[in-house]
Length: 414
Image (tube, rainbow, N blue to C red):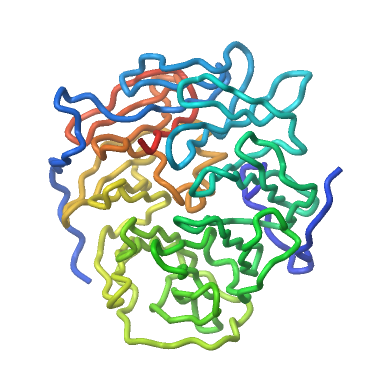
């Protein structure tokens, strides 16, 4: 990832090194009526929404009522990121003459800890148990990875530097998969980024690897001379199973139960190195559409949409997928569930979301960010009548509701 509006392009000469830092036709759109037991009886939505922007960090109820204002005034806050249990938020604050800081705050807005940082982090991801935070920021040759503790303090002086860098935490564990330029590595000692286990050179036709829950396997895209392939890799042995073709670059999101994955294909990309390794080849279907599901047990693929998807998240209970796709008048969120696709209407994204988040969507969807924890609604930042604001859109409503000012918003997991 990059601090700029585009990911750094590796020259091929950059070396990775630790650094010491001082099937069917597309379904017709229909209305979805979710029947989730977790929905509150009075129709209220679960969880809280963390909002960043020039007005500081706000923690809001889904109605827009303040749950807590952590920082306010002319202090810009970016990258609000919930821990996986939803009890804390980490964010980056630009505190004027004090420089950039990492802020960690409880979900109540209390017990906040701010720490001066070695670089302005533009991505955070919490480990499963909340003990560590993987933080990406601008580095020596493009992007650098630091590991922070639960208070946002680096656990060591060693950073991992690469032209581009994407990552994924092990579900239920604290191992980390790191995709750097064309290489893939496993980090088993999270406090020692100088000790990496290489897993080959799959290339750059995917961003973040996708762990399969309750396994030691992950999905990656391998760049071959005759095209890209989806591969399931056992991270401990390096053994791989081929799951069929990818049309160019791809985004991957695995369902919470580990049985299915969403594949979002881009236009074909040619060239690149061959991935020389032992691969088991099993019978699989060809690419069926720009957005499709794959059954990870059988390899069978199902069309979700004939349009490309640039952001996709499984709902917390795995019953639906929200897709962000281009439309004639901007972008549009659509929701797929039980074979039906429902468009939620076109919108114009906030400049911050467009430049700093959307280009790296397949890293951000490692965990649900726009879904409400009860699966009843999504939240996002948009421009309406020249004003940037935060919106909540219930799946059963025809239009969204503006709840606050701000330029990016993510929903808590609980």
